[in-house]
Image 1 (tube, rainbow, N blue to C red):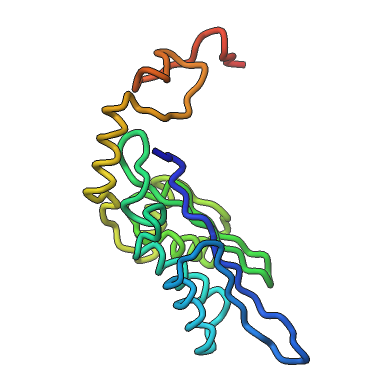
Image 2 (image 1 turned 30 degrees about the vertical axis):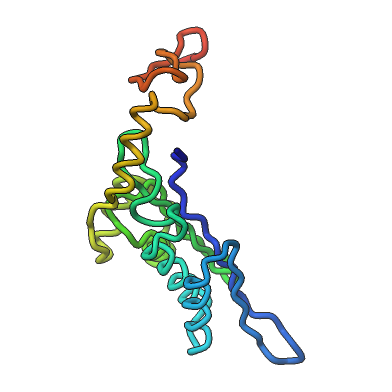
Length: 188
């Protein structure tokens, strides 16, 4: 099970010059055609690149593209699904990002709110969730029956794979709780 819990910024949207005519372009790294189409539709109606990107990413969050994007995807070691997202304005280089966002489905929308309504570039964990709620985003569970089953199967498999090292008990055969192996950790 992948515990990275990442929503990658998968759209590159910009305008290119073609004989003095601006041509909008939407490029999607993965074959998420519904997300690409919704982003394109925003541009065709005169929306901004930021609007297009947020709508495209939100489409994938809502549709749970390939099971790795949005709510119900890859739970963490405690069984909770959390989300990450980032947005950058190519013209101003303004950035907004959230990491370890809990209980809010629209991670890309919250990332955009970080960019527009705070001096921060990244908010994480409960601070990101608190900010999201203050900005009017709905708080709700990100867990689905599928993500709960993924977590249960992972625990039954002795929490394999996991990415722990230099800890005890042995992370290859145990689910922890873990602590550093004394010879591998300095508190300096």
